[in-house]
Length: 454
Image (cartoon, one colour):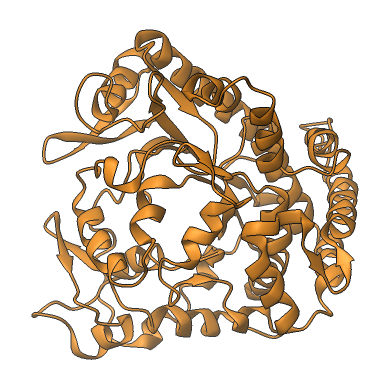
């Protein structure tokens, strides 16, 4: 749901065939592949633990203004309100409930990913000094606020999305306002590499999402889930979320993904800086018949790609989406895990083979059990920890092979934190947080912020 800054490429699409080569042109050479990070954090009031409003003292708009003043970001406005910031190639954007997101530029190594993340967190800590009454949390869901208590960020895009998704799922507004995630972007070298990578990610996503489950506390108490965020997504819009089974099959091509997105309803397009509700027309219908005298263009298609929400999706790169918001220490570990899996063909094939013999029913059962059980679920008769340990070993070996003359350190260093924190104690972040709360004299905003604060 990143900020869309202009109407995009105005090249008219007159036929579906105009899109046949779209994904091909973004393929990179093997040595040119990069890693991109999008990381969301939750702003709250220290006294109550409730989400920051957009307006008012210490509200999100004022926070963005202070980031601009203190840290050199350039404000981006809509209707004279600050809705995003830009500095060099980094963007700071807002999700619908005021979740603040770093959209970092793609870089070569996880060491660089960590450096960009550390700089952003340093900026947020400067804001906490200026506004000691607020705190920023690294978690998958707002811990105290109810959905109706959170104000909407005043972006036209979000007004249309709220209406559209509100008709599709009972928890759609909870997804938009309450939840936070970390997303990772990876390049592909060819059609085959892109679709194999998509298949591998979708097959492994239930396992990785379970390992990083981190949204077990909301509404001021344990919510009965390890990943309530994942459960919320299941009740958002089944048409455009989840794990599309077609992409788990061998032999899928770009045309299959194109069929998927062309069949989805278009939420909106932009004309002369105005956001227009498309009233449920699919993109294929938009191409065939137009809408109110408008013809679709490439900018419309690229905006449409950003409104498909499977657990991994294709854009100009492969975007991995299915992870609860993590602690600052765990985010580079997550990035290293996926880089180890995806940027070495042998490892990618071995990683898929760990789960590749499972049936669609096996994947479905695992996916359905994930929100409550996380890593306590079983898959094809084995505990999920069995698969996680092997996956991390594969990724570490791969990262050792990815060392370059420019960076002699192995990125497997980041996986050691994952091993020590998750694998050895066999405890996901959500359970570790619940165990911490169980030891507190009382569960209140200060104890929650002490654990989850950046």
